[in-house]
Structure formats: structure tokens, C-alpha cells
Length: 210
Image (cartoon, rainbow, N blue to C red; front, side, top):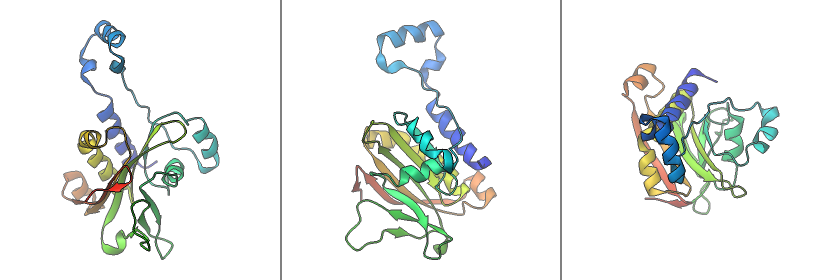
């Protein structure tokens, strides 16, 4: 795991964990949880993705667990598994040269459209934020990944700023957002926020949002 990927995980963990109940005493929290079913605390755990050889058993032990996956398939075997599942909106694939990464739209394509979105070949880094729902267990799988570590962190920052809007727009469904970043590979520009972000594509429940 790179430091930048870990920073992305901590960023999203901190967005999920804090809530108004943390201000209350333990006795009040216990009373509230007995009265209102939605008052349960959420404390997501950060763990390393499995090695490719261990991935099958790892997935089997988490079939009912909602997951947030950080990083693309080059480093995260779990992300590679789920981006190939039914319902995924986007996937990172090798480009025509077999080396560089680009993105492919998996849903909402017109006939004959390969759905390829170029990345570094056209001077940009790509990132996606997408959520799918397991058909067998109903678990939510959220993926946040980029064509590089900087784009992954920038995608996590975008999700942390926009997850409330996504929740209002697609409360219990699936969504996919494709992002393009310019300047995000420069550490100074990345940490000072001086890079540009463009939303290239948006899909909600498999339908493209113009």
C-alpha cells in the first residue's frame, strides 16, 4: 500500500465515522440506540487488500460486508474483482500499447462504441467513484480509484466533498462518476489544490445523466 492510498482511506474513514452521537455521553447514546434503530455507530476498519492468491477466500468471507475499495486493479485485487462484476459502470484496462492504463465505460454505451477513455496519452489522469450492489447479498461495494496514486487520492477527496449529494441523488441505488484530473501528479499542486477536475461521465442506476 502506498502512503497516498492510505491517506485516501483515512480521509474517507474520517468522513464516515464522525457524527452527532459522538458528542453525547455513553448513557445517552445507549438510550437513543434503544429508541431509534438508525442510531448505531459506524466505525469502518481499514485493512489491506488481499494478495491475488488469497483473494478468493477473502471475497468468500465478506460476501455480506459493505466495502469501500481504494485503488485500482494494479494494486488492489479486490478492486479488480469487483470492477469486473455485473453492475460496474467503469473499469480500468490496459491501453492499446498494453502498458498505459485507460478507462472503459461498461454501461450505457451505444452499439459499436468501445467505451475507451484515454488517460495519460491525452495529458490527463482518470479516476472513478462508483457504487454497485451485490445481487446475492445486497452488500454495497463502493470503488474509488485512479490511474495513479495522485488520481486515487483526488477521487477520494471528490467523494468526501460530494457524497451527501450522491446520497440525495441516488439514495439506495448504483452510481458511477468518471473524473479527469490535470496537474494532479505534481505533489505541490495536488496538496495545494491547484489541479483541475472535470466530470467526464455520470451514471445513476445504469442510465447516463447528461
